[in-house]
View 1: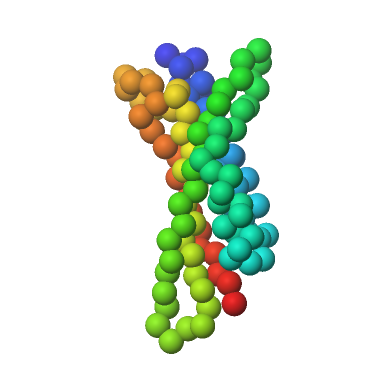
View 2 (view 1 turned 30 degrees about the vertical axis):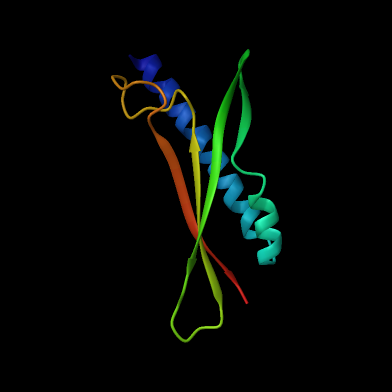
Amino acid sequence: MNNQVQINAEIEYHAVSIAQNEIDQIKWIKSESALNDHLNKFPQKVPLTVGNDTLFYNVNIDIADITIPNSNIKNKKVSVRVSNKFLKNNSNNNKGNRNIELGFIKSFN
């Protein structure tokens, strides 16, 4: 049981790391057109080698417009969702029924 908990924690850690890496990349994007170009790459599979195996994480990004009254700043809600066939809520769940989702607000002038 301890090994299973450790493995689940490592898979979740890597999923969070992959999601945070995408957020960090998007934070540096300067224009809406560059953001749209970046989004055209998704969904994608990200390989991660662990020991002698390669795990594939599914990464998808969703963008939604957020309007602020009387503002000329364009805001976008960015949601990065990462899944893996081994991510699960607890040791009794079937494989692959959980996502890691991180989000932030991206603004353009």
